[in-house]
Length: 537
Image (cartoon, rainbow, N blue to C red; front, side):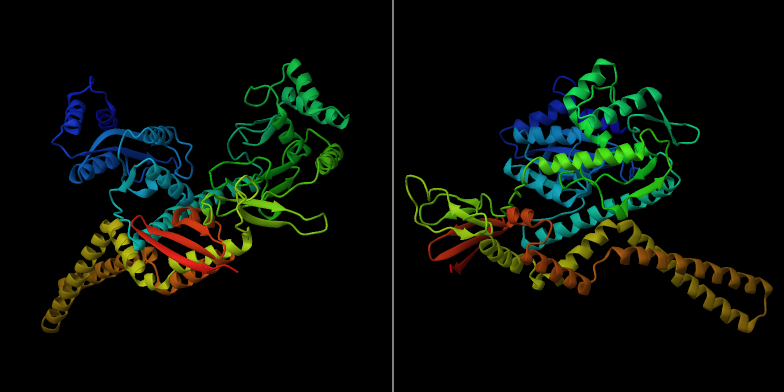
């Protein structure tokens, strides 16, 4: 059934009369319908909490009642929403760039993305293309409260995803403690025994690993080692020729010394990408000595690590890359040019001076507007931003709106609680009635009926308590939210909030620097702009 719906939404004009009728309505000069596409998704670890069919039916109904025509559907199956590396999602974004539609409609925002940063950045990208993101269940507007509410909803979606990942991780850690293979391809030199699920040596691949360590200790270059391996017919575990990254991972892998390791690679970054060269802290890594058969001696491995470190230290001094939070946001009030990030030292003994300066300061125009220290201007902007975004006056309204959202999301649970409560009241009435009768007539049948009713009442009350607990667990406590607001505000002002750059990109329209003052324009909603004047020191 779900495939039929997708086919109807995706089919060309020649393929179905239904699609032709939709397109005729779209291009009728007397029709005001706007073009929309449906995006639906389920992940393999979610057991399909909403089927694709249900999502598309709801999207179609929502579109028809809100003046949209669904011209296409993009569906990703068994793919997580914490990354944008989804085939249909990418195709949808490509088509959005070409302005093939006016809106993307999802059943819920967590179908679009389960990561706050990904959701916000992608939504902003769609807005640049003139495309709106709409949710069937979660109705949000562009007023200031909805912007904050959206952040809370995205946070709850991300919490669900990360909490689920944490539960999955618990099971994987149990397997890891037993030195069992936890999934994916084993590293070169090993295979998985299907009976024991433990790693065993693949002798052909293991010989390539021994060559790599031996040649590296002999002083051979990566290029030379790769050339020898490929000439002898060795390949990586994926059947590809060896390259620099392949050698890097092998030379750093202590598993070859017989140490079972798990949870070593660093987590995905905010873009959903892995950096295989980064590792987690030792406290998070599981290591079991003798957990796998050794291919390389510990002495050779340690010697290789010393050599790798020595080469790294000789590679040259590392110059830290400076982060400029206000890139593309600062304008010179004197000549209208942009302010760019700049870092320099007067000499080797002086500390690094990091600033923003007018791009025309040292050019033909020779703008006289002085540069401004990065720390100073960023601190001013972050303070103004925190006062607006984390204004505690919005907390009561935000709590009410979020809890209303929770109630709409859990209509079925609330209905069950209502039915349950009504049943409890009926049981109480029946029990009181039987008690009254027993005071007049001693009847074994009535006593048995009374016992049954009391058992039923106890079960209903227990069920009601569980349903109420479920609803209460999703609601927001105003005191707790105020505490979170204060903590987040402090972190934003100090510049330690992880997503401060995203907040600046979303809410700061521009910062204009004059010789005597700084003007900060904040976008709290598309039609709501605040200007703040700050005297320049």
